[in-house]
Image (cartoon, rainbow, N blue to C red; front, side):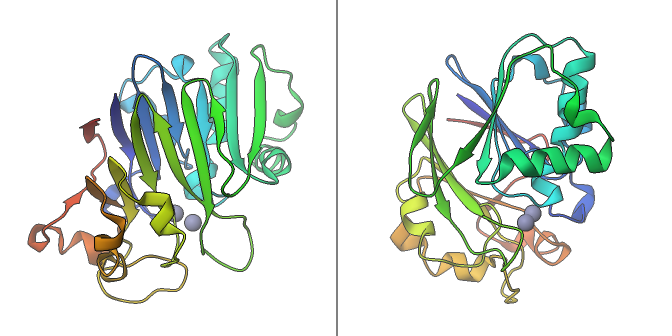
Length: 244
Ligand SMILES: [Zn+2]
Ligand SMILES: [Zn+2]
């Protein structure tokens, strides 16, 4: 199985990076984790056939994680996609998806797709299986409005991928990520405490409890990006591929 960082930037494109989108492929799976506003051009740049993607998991409704869906869906329609597609995300996703489609392309939510589209709500600490992909969401802390906000623990082909999504430190990150084969963790800042976001320092304080087999940092601000060469951690970059 392989995970490609199609985009690993923050909301502001720091370092010229694309918004969050990870592509996971293997013999039994082909799915995305998040689909931020700039994800369709990033998928095309990476030469990824969108028509083979079965499932898109969404962590929250911020534009840098969610607003690529209208572009993805319209592109699928115009490129005559036939494969069924499941989009799974926080409770309320059915309504939020209609709202973002209407905001960006009026009437687009009313177009009947030529392919079967299922929009599914995920609920904290309830595992749902989509084919060979098992998803256990955990509630994370990313603001007082605009939620729910989820981090994801994903099982596929005998491997576990944990993704904090955007969050300040919260104890749910421990069961979310414990002993994961790969933990993709937000490291928005180095040590500066920013509300609703995770600093590398806050994460480091708990790494011994989490014990990820592998850690890759993502969603970094300019402050973090300027320090990368001096840090003993692997940081994602757009196009990076990880074998699992
Ligand atoms: Zn974000
Ligand atoms: Zn966010």
